[in-house]
Image: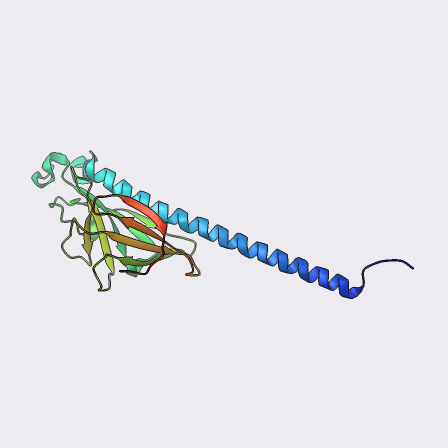
Length: 201
């Protein structure tokens, strides 16, 4: 008598193989999503750092580069601030801006005419929410800006007057809204990315 697989044994083997393959593919997909989400968190953190470096070093304002008549309000060419603006009405992008680009004194509040670069967030990832500890009201816009010579962050909430002693937290999420990362901007100007463990406030 010849030994071999019965039809039942073959079907069971195929079912086990399908289950193991499905689990492996799902875990790989989750791993890739987590990596991309972490990358997004660091990309935003680096954009904020870019604004900080522009603000506290020697990047001359556009109005002083393109014109020989540099406004006195810009302190001889280096009085602009630089910042990042987050808008929950456009949660798949954020903006690098020059605070004082038009020649006015920096006010730490983003104006459309001050835009330098628009960063798009792709692949279904987005900004989930914005938080400022101690502020319970809904935050629709957040501008974080820097101006020389100090590295401290100026935080403007919903277009209001900026504060230099506020922490700002930006939460980003994956397409399934399962995992999140938190970008923390300290009042001192320190920027970090961490796993989001708690809701706003």
